[in-house]
Amino acid sequence: MTHNPIRPWRNIDRRVSRKIRVGSVEVGGDAPIAVQSMTNTLTHDAGATIAQIRRMEQAGADIVRVSCPDQASTAALREIVQNVDAPIVADIHFHYKRGVEAADAGAACLRINPGNIGSLARVKEVVAAARANGCSMRIGVNGGSLERHLLEKYGEPCPDAMVESALDHALILDDLGFHEYKISVKASDMFMTVAAYQKLAEATDAPLHLGITEAGGLRTGTVKSAIGMGNLLWAGIGDTIRVSLSADPVEEVKVGYEMLKSLGLRTRGVNIIACPSCARQGFDVISTVEILEKRLAHITEPISLSIIGCVVNGPGEAAMTDLGFTGGGGESGMMYAAGKPDHKVGNATMVEEIVAAVEAKAEKLREARETAGIAAE
Ligand code: SF4
Image (cartoon, rainbow, N blue to C red; front, side):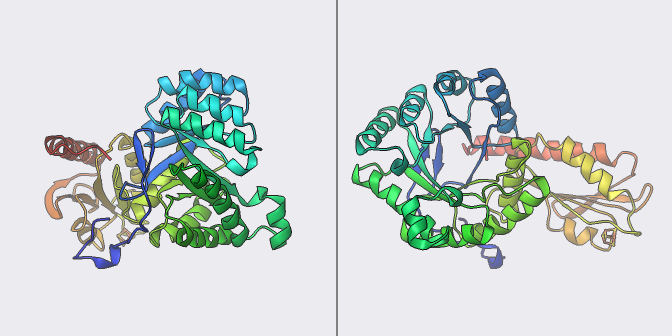
């Protein structure tokens, strides 16, 4: 994490984890926190799954998980992997053979709990397939499906039980000399999840995959995830995230990015700072922001943009953003560039002018980035 000497209150010291690879994406260490989502199509319908993954990629998904409940799914996986860019995590439960098939089909990572697939011989088979295919793993402990002996020991699902479960699974892989794994300890109870991750972060250097499971619909799930995962991310915990929403997976990607952008942990795309609007507004702030969010969704270069209803807060916000617009009513709006007033713009043309200014800025940033040989966010 780059330290901000001018605004030290923005600094987040990330926990030092070891780095693993999920296909082309690094997870852990100093790698950017990766945003994941999961398909909800039938995996054996390769066409529908590929189409959904492409939509997720456009929204910025770094990694995508697909369920592999049966052989038809792992059979479709090969075609899926070949037709998308994002590394694919195959979600395996119970049937170790699906894990072997998924690794052979090109999955970049297996979500599998080695303690749940039966004998050590089976685990060895999965690990061998993972090794042979350069595939990593995610140990995914879920508060709702803890091992019986842990429930008996602890009485009910709790952070200690989740961490013990995770470390038990990890030990199986460590004993086999396989360290290319990350861990998640998710529960639908936000408090339990946060406490479990805090404890786990102390107990291992494995990269951590954050999530509040079954968080709810778009609004509820977003709030719950932002509080729980935001708390952890702010404390420097978490190397990859998935926001679980009962909604279009594309929304999960968007919410994940917004969460990381709010904390300054990722910078992809336009970060719009907008006022809530009031009787002083010189234009309709709410509908304008809605339009701009749609019109600027294709921008991937990091740009901050302030859209403020009037001069009460407009110039101040514009001073801290790359581009800005402050309403003045009618023809008296003001465009700002690099924090300074640039030129007057009327309400009738403001949207077009703002979009053009952002696109031009994005193009300049892209050129500068490519000249410097820096990869896109
Ligand atoms: S910036 Fe102006 S328009 Fe926006 S909420 Fe504040 S006073 Fe109202």
